[in-house]
Length: 345
Image (cartoon, rainbow, N blue to C red; front, side, top):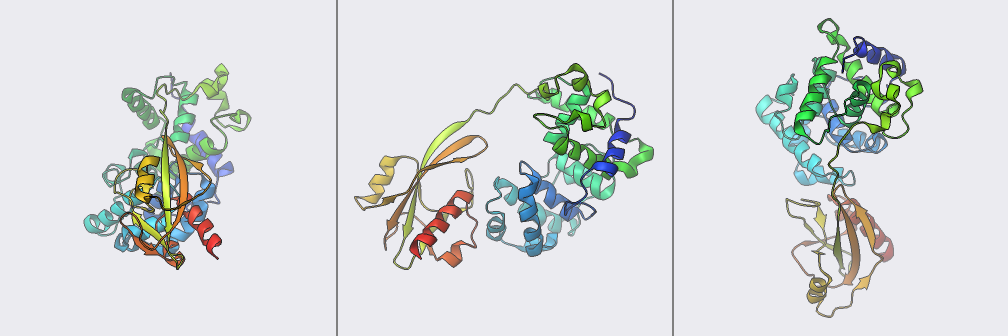
């Protein structure tokens, strides 16, 4: 396996001619805005982030505003974006930047990676975009580009092989005399992975690396990257007891700080129908259609029930429609409550 001598310059030239330049977090060297976009883009499509990013900045235009907010406010604005640990780490990171770094993000990838919720790849992206540091990134899209070009077929489920790929990512960086190319190079790798070097059906004819790509030359680009360990999916049944009083208020409480939907507001959840029936003590609850909510590692089979009552079950508080709309809520619950609101109108 050999590193192509002009790999970095090919990526830089392609990005400047053909790469994405319309995204709202591009064209800035403000580390707060770049960091925010990188966190939002983790395991989330660009089209979704385009909706959340401007609303988040309007509410929290700088890191000091985010640090001063309550976690409940942050979760409320993040509601529906998923992977809520990102929002909790975002809040913790902002507080640490303010308290330990006087409101200024550190200028090196090493120091950035020491902050909550910032892994090595995100730290590298912020350092490259904002400070021009010669440091690699290795998100899912970039991992796919590099393994295909290099023909890197070692199993990335093994930590040693992941470290080896990081070494290759470092070798492929623009030379020391071209450090000013780092923003275009980093963005170019991201753009290639997102728009050309796709997981399925890569557009090799449009790729500036096609003639030096080991996977294309071997005719098997979709074989890369290699990762033998697969996610083991589980299915769980959750019964959601939507309790409503005569005024149309809903009974909600924050979820535990660990686990699914941690910290988000939710009605009482029962993982066994028998436990739900015991809590109801014969009270008549209206069963709504069940549906599946897909998470990273499991499928939640959600079974909503509506109970009209003045004496609710479980800890919590009553929230009117105006109040619950400002809470941090899991996306499926927000939809259920909107249905409930429409039903009660």
